[in-house]
Image (cartoon, rainbow, N blue to C red):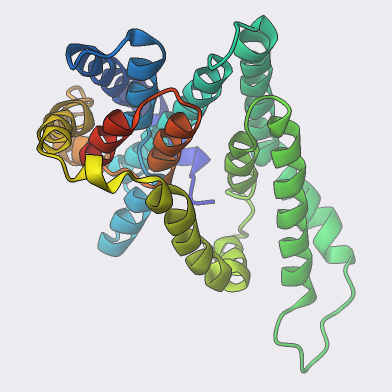
Length: 306
């Protein structure tokens, strides 16, 4: 919802190059280092590289918002690069887990291509269709809000549309590989919705209704997926620590820091902003170990790196 399509037109091309570098460099260097540790390219090295690739949009948004630079060109360059980085990582995620069995052209090639096309169409609709449909045709037709109501009918209708689109997009992309694509694009669909003078209102409506559930579900997610699956004995071994430290310094940090050398004076700010990782990276690692694509020691190395 924080994506600024107007700013993206200015910084978009360079930010996309930053995103590609920030995705490919951790993927390749992480895979090569995993192979240097004695593991095969498929599936171990590719799984580790994929887990190291995503940048946390949430962390970047929070940091940029706290210092008040979100609307500057370099702030939107960071957000644009982080968004594209996550989209590329989602594609890698889908391809990775389609390789866990026998090669299937439909699941490995055709469905990801359809998914990318769908996301492109959804992004066009986010700019051209949804602002017009919601602000001009849907919300004005809702009944008027009563005087004692805490939430306006417009906000109730807007939240219902958000949830409906989230479910619809998530369901569509579930059959194309992963529901995460749909969730990602559903949020972006409301980035152009705010009327002049009401910047941030759409995000406020969403946060007001979901913040308590979100804060608890994040805790449960980390406790019941990542935390429960960590092999403590391997995690606390010296081998996992030193190998994970090297992987953290080079593929995890250095590749992101140096992914924007052509962005002028803001290159280091953009590079460091791309370093942050969050739940998606841990989810990839956890799903990889659950699918027997990596062993307990490799999982521990990846956790130390992240």
